[in-house]
View 1 (cartoon, rainbow, N blue to C red):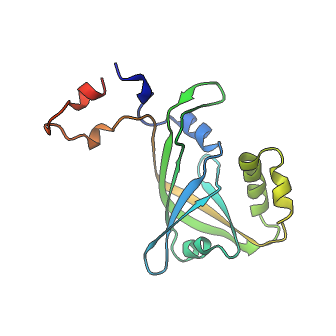
View 2: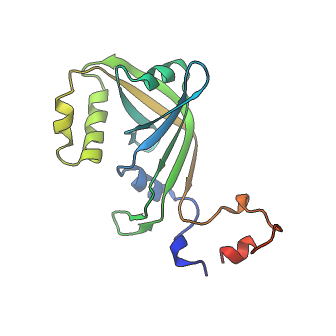
View 3: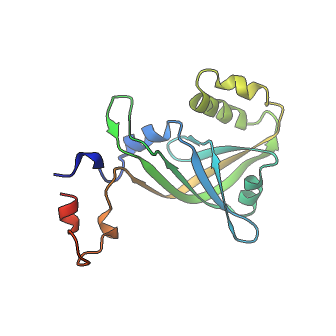
Length: 178
């Protein structure tokens, strides 16, 4: 039997993923600078079940980078275990996404980004979240949509079998994860 600290291992199911993505973990968004080097930034996001949405400030470099090259990846993870709304335990969840991001709105005041930003402010800041937002509503924002082409999830502390190299000494994968 696997050691208890490992928790449930393997992919999150759709419901577990949606519950986790509805929480307040930050995404780390990776995009490409014009010279081809990577640029990574922590961002708030909104998951609608098929796309990720981001609201960027007018002068955010990452928004310009995405406008020029929409190839992006994000990672959303939690360093701790938690429970979903029903009390079901989720062990150190991780979500990795690759896809193409598109600019839905260039910087503007009062666009569709306002509703997305309001929803995110509740998720990240609680019931008083919109109070933060109100003071900045006259600041132009971008609205960006990421359409995933690949989503991988994982939970637990163990290794995936694909990473285990047998015959190198020590215990086998089956022995370690039994």
